[in-house]
View 1 (cartoon, rainbow, N blue to C red):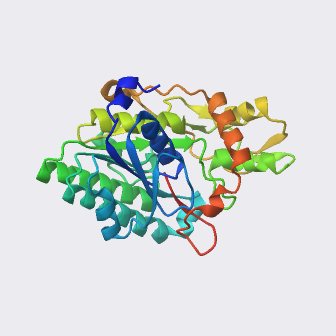
View 2 (tube, rainbow, N blue to C red):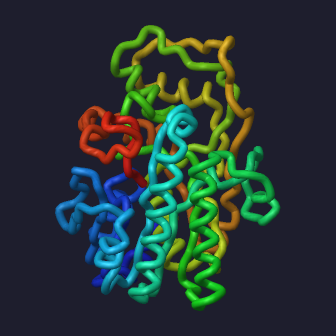
View 3 (tube, helix red, strand yellow):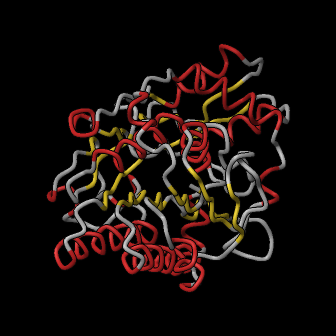
Length: 337
């Protein structure tokens, strides 16, 4: 839980949240608006997230738009990104890489030119080279990123912030790397959803049994969106010293445990298809630095997070239809956070 004095520090401040209609962005916007900040959300999604938030429809690949939206801002939460499944990433690499480069370059440069005092950039676990446990160190980034095209785009934005810190003395531009984030506002597009929304959609649609690839032994770090949003606010508030910090749960959850937790409160049959690959055996984030540096304290249990996500899904099943698609004229991807 984020401390009240941190949220109170945003009272009356002008805050821009790019990608503020996505999963992390909407939580940031809600927390800040409820705390008394003047919040603006910039997005291409036809979605409203809070009645006290100024929703601005516009394209972050347009530098003029970014320059206008960052004007007179006290802080910028640059959370906008493009989310899609592994297959979509492989099939449409330019649709990830090019817009991400433009988003990041435009928002960061516009913020610099408009003398925005504080900014936090949401990178990704995909910027890391392959490993079992991800720890913030230069050695971790010696190889190529796991998510090749989006990962390089994220790393390049991190480098842009480092360059600003060196050349312009922008000490209050911070970076976070979230892991596998889930929660209300997640991407439930059936064509490219990630593991948790995919499972929920298949359960809802009555698949019997729900077939899960692999033997369920693969371990991942699943972080609830509210916890990550709080961590992002804390990163901007305290600063990260120009380096990135991990935002995860710090807890490894096997796919088998994930499915069984869903089964504990939902009625469905399932089976594991061991003829299919299980994926990389183990990927967990070390969040020790975030705990020490920015007072990050993820507290949502997997069961509570999944139940909250399920309830949101039941009420918002078609939201993905109103979100920007970057992969084709049909629905294959979207602007998110």
